[in-house]
Image 1: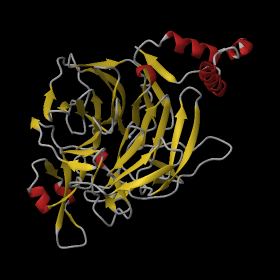
Image 2: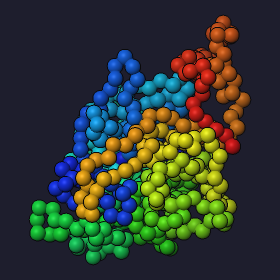
Image 3: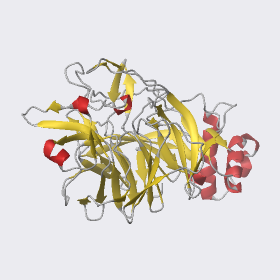
Image 4: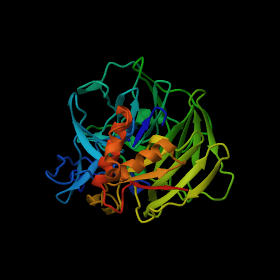
Length: 443
C-alpha cells in the first residue's frame, strides 16, 4: 500500500513453535517473517508477481518497492535494496539498485511518497514488529536509504498493516496491529487487546497484542513525532483497512468484521473525526486488504479485498464525498479478484491497480499456524478510467497503435511530443495485436 501527496506489505518462521501473532479477529491480519531473495528470470519475463508491496505514481511512472512472492513453493518477502518502475506509456519495466542503511525485508509496512522522498514505517522483519522509520530521496542520482533516528518525541509502538495520510509535510499514521506493554495498554483508550495472542517476549513481563485506532504524526520538516488529541467519534481499532487523502480530509474504511463497509473522515487540520452514514442503502460488503484511492476532487475508488466470508473480491465502488453515497462501478475485471494489491492515482484521474493475490487461505488449528499458505500472486496492471481522455492523449494513442502507417510523419513531431509518441509505439509493439491498451474501462 502507498499514500502520497495529492493522491504502498512476523511471526511466521517456525510457526508451530509460537502462537500466530496477528491472527485474532480476521485471517487477513496474518504476518510473515520468512525471508529469501527474489528470483528473476533472464532473457524472459521479469519475476514481478507480488502482494503487500509499496507503490506510487509519479509523472506517468508506477514505482514498486518490496512485497511478498511465492518462490520455489515458499512464501518469501522481497528484498529492500531495489525499486522497480513501470512506464505506462511505453509498457517497459526497469529497476534501480539502492544502497545505504537499507531497511530489512518487511511485510505489512506503510509507505508514503512526499516531495520526491519515499518513507517506510513499521511492518514486520525477522525479529518481529518494528516501529522504525526509513527514507530515501528518489530525486538524487543514487538511491541511498537513511534510517531516521535523530527525531523529536516518541515514535508509535511497533505495528503493521496500518495506513498513512500525507498532508502539509506531515505523515499521519492511523491504526494497525502490534504489541504494547501492560503500562501502555492501561494508558491507552484506543487499543483493543487480541485475547488469543497474549505472549511473553523472553522476560517476565507480558505483552499484549491487538488493534489500535491511534493517530500519530511525523513532521518531515522538523523530524518530530506527535500524537494529537482527536475529537468526535473515532473509528473502532483496526488493521488491514484502506485509507485515502482528499484535500485536508483523511478517509478510512474497512478492516472490520462487519457485514457492510464503514467509512470515517478525519479533518487533518482540526483532528475531528466524523463517521459517515451513506445516504443510500447501496453499500459495499465489509472487507480487509482492499484499496481506496482518489478518483477526482470529490470521489474515492474502492477495489477488491478479502470479504468477511473469506472470499477474495473483484468489485469496484465509487464514493462521492459530497453526496455521501456509494455507487458500484461496472467493469470488465470481475474475473480478476484482488487482495493485498496496490492502487494509485495516475494521469487523467486513472486509477492504476497492480499486483495482489487472487486467493487467500490459511491452515491452522486453534492456536498455531500449521504452514504458510501459497498465494496466487499477480503482476498484471489494471487501469480504471474515470473521465474522458483529452484529445491530445487520444491522438498520441492513435499514433502509437498505427505507427506503421505514419512512420515518416511521426519524425516531424516536436521533440517532447515525439518522445511520448515513441513510447506509445513501443507499448503497442510489445502488446498482442488484439490488446494494444492496458486493461481499462470508463463507465
